[in-house]
Image (cartoon, rainbow, N blue to C red; front, side, top):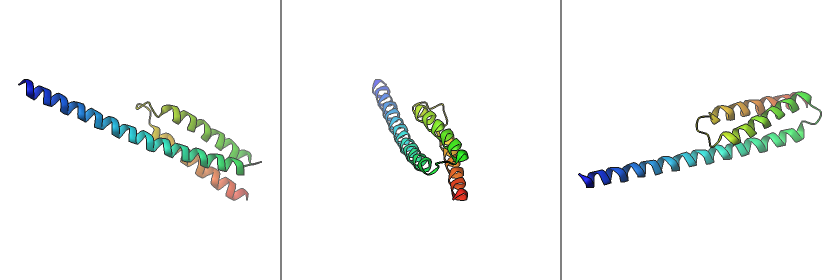
Length: 101
């Protein structure tokens, strides 16, 4: 009986380790994705000189990017929804800049 209890405890610990590794992997992927979006936003910002609407949306995107970076460690926040929001904003900025060119 004691041996079964020890084996179950080992199994539970291994499951928790695997879950932690998966969570870290997801966090790393999200972090890389956020960094990519931030770089894209900086590139767009350098091309948005004099375009007030594009600048407005880019500042909004930067704000959400910073917020998302802080939320990465908090599992209760939906980081993927924020990433989608950032992508949508950057897409809108790209269209604005293309129309203005």
